[in-house]
Length: 536
Image (cartoon, rainbow, N blue to C red; front, side):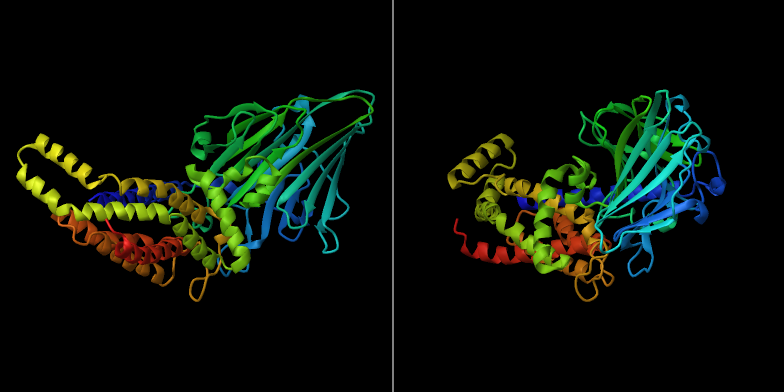
């Protein structure tokens, strides 16, 4: 039957996802064996240790920045609304500087004559502040922290960090005051650097059996909304060189992203990638040369997003930045589906119940298509005895067999592909919902009920996967009832499929398994209603 063919297609798709995920985990396991014992010594390019005497901290209600006074680089960020693991007391560190892992956001301004040396400490500005700790109080909605550097010739550099309440967007403003009698030429650069090899403590979230997670860099330009670039490409020194006025650069991982967004559209920005020592990948951009006349002032600004992948807020910070959320090639469907899920959660205040609600809505919207599918299935079942007679009668004449089958289908008004087309129409929507549930940071550590306290992690007692397998068995049994044209191989496949899927789903995120289980329950109910009432 066509329904069996549909089922095998879906099974193959899921098996492909599993195979890719297992392959990816094996690759990552091989990478993790790379030695990094030389990581903890200092060099002239990268800060590798946090010294409380040379660092300042800036904190609002959602993020805490640690900034190196040498160059003003952000060497650590703590996300105050997220924990590193479920039930942990430690805030999640997105940017980090430690003996075995480096992830920093660098930016500064230097004289153009030092171009090529801009990342070396000897050429970076030394900034000073009045104190080392700054906190946004409840009475204020914004905090501005200026860092000051004055050159020997009297040029003033003021680098100001601006944090707003409940925001992961950090504005970095440069003010260059040229008090001299000569003009100066400057460039501004922004760069993100990260260790290619993650410590094991950081790998658990990026290893997911249900979805291949991209960890690497991305960028947007005037001519390209969004492109990803692998760490391995940077490691192989296949470096990017792109010029643009607008856009951004970013580093991606599951649920979280860091991105530099230039705001100076009067200058071109030149995007680049680099492979650095100590197995570190970098992506950044540099401005054109900025000419500052004598006795003149120039202002420059960049924005750093460093936090969770929040769709609406990222879209407001920069065009196309929300595309960094891993919604796959069906992002144009996943994005509105998430907006609907968010509206539902504003009502239920529970992401699990919101998933149940959106499943009901999806099945309701798909009801006319599902009904057409069941009508086609019923028609095919009705003529199965006639089909069997024709096959027996013309078993040795394939041409006559085909002609008689066509005549039978026309006479009975049956389209042999009638059950396949509705399934193909529904598949993109359900795949989009699949990617949306897998990639939404809002489900990370989100509780549902009772034993399910993290919808982004597997069911600890495997109750939902087992229920999903049972519902799949009943759907299979109902849809293949009275099918007398099954080979023994098809019988074995159909009998084993619910069991195999149950095994796979044991490690799938519980939010995704919840969706499939509820969807199957609705399908069982629809089957009974439609097969009872459909007359063919």
